[in-house]
Image (cartoon, rainbow, N blue to C red; front, side, top):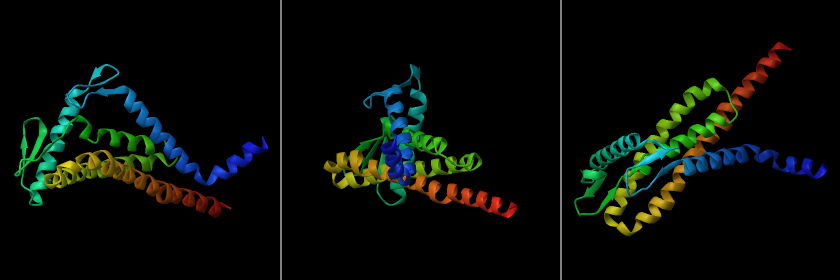
Length: 198
């Protein structure tokens, strides 16, 4: 029993991060084993329910928004059928259902939804965070497309490593803000109310 108490005391300062990681892992694996689809086609299902139309709408929108962003910044790109974004030098990337950012939005919502904190603040913080997740996704696809225009061999490392980890760093940063600013402010407010009543 003493050993358990000692371990608990050692882990106590990291309890928030541990809880964050558990929610992240749980939501990731729930998605992985229930949201089924092949990146080479457009069929996506959740417990046998066909969600392909929703994901196709998301992929279409991301492709259109990314093309608009690239052109706004002077990078000449054309949106072709099947959500292929092609540059004037012939290089191209394709936006598929897994590029929608839906998974990251779901994970962020799970982290804040299941984490400790005031419910009423979650009602505005989750939608605000989803806007950030959406904006970062467009930025991510635009950057991958822009960089691979001149360096097509960089696609794998950009898509599968650099921007994927940056995505989760953004989600982690939003959780840190929730934990360190919003939730702790609520705790301070409650403590002030208790002190004022005494």
